[in-house]
Structure formats: C-alpha cells, structure tokens
Image 1 (cartoon, rainbow, N blue to C red):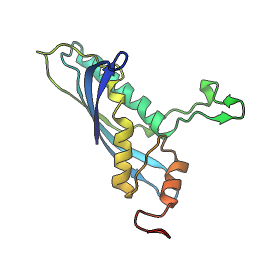
Image 2: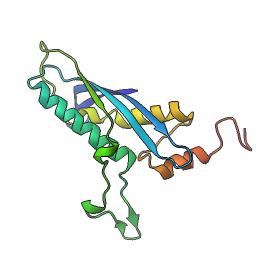
Image 3: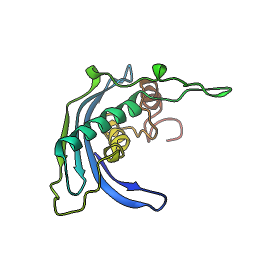
Length: 164
C-alpha cells in the first residue's frame, strides 16, 4: 500500500489530487517474475465532473505504471541512450493486467483538482511495499524486472551473511 499527493507546477508547486494504491502480487523466486493479481486505486480529485472519465484515466495510470515498474528500462551503451524507438520498449500486455478496482472520493463540495497522472505516483512505492511483504526484502529501485528481483533475493537476508 502507498499513497501520495500529486503536485503541479514548479517547486514548491501546489497540491492537487490524492491517490492511494493497494496491490496484491506474488513472486516466483526462481524466475524473479512478479504476477500482479489485483490493484485497488483510491482517488480524491475534489469535485468529479465526469466519473467514468476519471475511472478511465486511473485505469490508464495503472497500466502505464505497471509497465514502467515491471518492464520498462532505458538501455545505455557507450554512446549514451540506446533505447531510441518505441518498438523495442516493452509495455505490459492485456494478459498480464490484473483486475483494477477504482474508488472515487465523493467530494462534490470541493474544487476539482484533476485526475491526470496523479494515480501513477504511489504505484512504484506500493509495488515495492508489496514485494517486501511477499519476500521480506526491500526493493529500492524500479523497474522490478525478473533480473532485479533475483539479484535482491540472492543477497544475504538482513542479519545473515559474513558481516551479520
């Protein structure tokens, strides 16, 4: 679980929508593959003018965030960025998308704060927290690719190893 408030504009900016994620996942320790089994997103956008539009926006935020957190990685070579075309940039497929439940706060007495990308913000932290719950290990850097998961799981657990 994680939550965050989206901030618009230049520093220090101004606060906009709040979002929270609750995520269920499983991890195959041998392969390092993460299976996301459910995402619940709660959103406070203030006044909601078009509830279905907000729900669709939040579904898109979840899809994009899962891709960024599980698959996407900019590749570098000696000349710099090697990922130069979208065809080689992986995104999550429909078969790997979990059920997504959206809960909207009914705050019609407040000014609208927008939906935008606000629901993307807590996603990486929620996934990292769910990974900790599943494995007992802290994951500090997305993307949480199978290679990254296996690398974290291969390290000695806290309190174990030669320097414990």
